[in-house]
Amino acid sequence: MTTAPFPTYRWRLAPDGLATRRQLRAMGLRPGGQDVAAELQRPRRRRGPLVAYLYRIDRAMPVRPMTPGRRAALAKAMTARRTCPNCRRDAGYCIPRSLGMCVPCSDSFTPVA
Image (cartoon, rainbow, N blue to C red; front, side, top):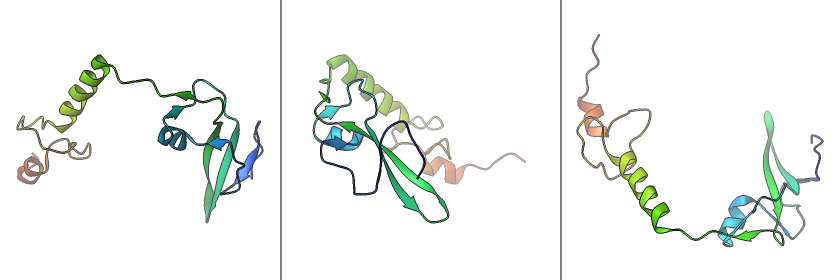
């Protein structure tokens, strides 16, 4: 384990009262600007450990409610991710960045050599 400016715990050995961002979100909370309280490390073979930062649950704040403006902006962004730039149709899924277009357009696409 590496030394950090805060306590470091091994996988599944963190004390109660600490949670990751995902765990806080599942509880309807967010870190709310607090500093990282501890670090969780999960060892892996042949690579460095996976690291997760832990936050204090008692200092967490409730998640901000979704406003109509934020909801509209999110819907617009998701529509843009689903729209194929080649055929301009809604693919019904997020277009893979590796392809840059929907799968049918990618299958019929022949690169210029």
